[in-house]
Image (cartoon, rainbow, N blue to C red; front, side):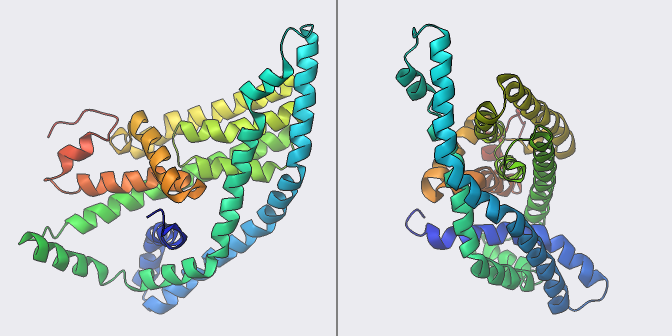
Length: 318
């Protein structure tokens, strides 16, 4: 998988986009539109969203990369002033080495650069989405036939349970991630922080990784606030991140999604390391959706539901 990630990453992204788009396609088909026309309308909407997002985000990513050395230099100056305040009792070199501000901001830059690389595969992703949506009407029957051939008898409701659970998870997670990104963009914009759209995008992407993702998304923005603004404003922005993620990730998501769709913190961390190693920065974003896909697939069958309980946040009786 690691050797083939140039092909697999766009394919996985296309699969997740298709899962999100299937309900819209089915809705249009129920309004007596031909499948081809329904798919065309959905693809046009996706293209419009991508072009709109690319217009705002593309320039911000380039500008952020250009200003990254300036931010690192300014942060070193702030740390030097901080060390001087304590009468040089603190070594600036050790302080910078311990905090590693370049690593935090470098990770954000690498993640955004990986996103740009993913956009280079845009046409491959879109064509894959088109063909998957065109196959949605016949795919359940094919999967049922394969399962029956492999197991002797097939579970006719397995694929339906699996796809409905996965659509529900991805739909709710995408919606809450979008709200998180909008709140972060408004928060950073209110304080006058550079590139608020970029911080909103980063929060949107990393919200797919519970707990750990929100922390990773907050670190670069707080560092930039520490450089550009005052210490008090940086602390207020950090507190705003904490409040947003506690409200959405800690209260709203569990209530809407149900705690049964949660993953244990250990599984989240291990999946982040594993999929990040295989697929790079994009794999870190896809880590929890990929692990949740495996968990939902295991839960959808009585024979493997006990294995799914090992990944869950709650104890389940089988």
